[in-house]
Image (cartoon, rainbow, N blue to C red):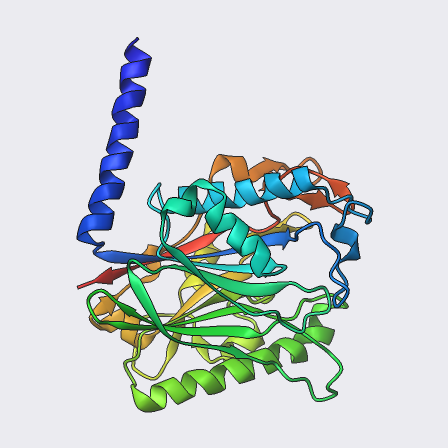
Length: 341
């Protein structure tokens, strides 16, 4: 009886908090990024190399496994938002708009007013970046998909998603979502590919700074490089220290996570911070404001499993090789709170 009363009080508290947030507006925006590890539907797209993720393919990707994956992604989004889901949810490794529509319409986040920004990219496997945003809090006034064009015109990677929003308090926020080329084939051999992605992104950032040196910019994604790697420090020119933050500059808030003996992905027993949030100097000093302490890795217990080979724990992923593991993702989500003054 006592347990039932406590549960009822907890449910009522969550409901009340959600109603207050929806009717009065928030004093902050929460921006989340999550590499969801192969969020494919079960259909074969003849234009992409997605055959493995079909019922007859190597992964034996059935409808029940897909539904489980969709519901797991919902659970993470809801929990990152503490039951009032994040204002912006940036994603990578999603196959198409259909899986995004399914996520926001056929899970409990359907009652929140999410809109979708997505476009099929030229990635050979058919995986894209995407963005969900709460249109009850934000208005999208511009969107663009920046093509990373390789010199030989044969290599393909994901587009960079760029969107501009206006908040209820009339502040403008620029958001970029990235999934840079992988390290497959060796980090050193593939460094030029990520440097190229950084070049295209920096060009767009500079065009924003040329109009407003104090522009509010959030850059997030899976960069397949760490904060101190060349693509981010030299290519993107993202500083790793926010002391004396200046206009016309970028600052990598995820660099501060390197001192915590953790990361967003674990490879051969070592943690790496490949999923990152980078902001402009304007967001560290302006009307909309954040700092490194407000940038976090989401580490719910259910996102981990024992690391029997290297000890400790590791992300609870969907597949290990071609073996179905029934987990969430090989990456951990990250998020950032931006205060609205």
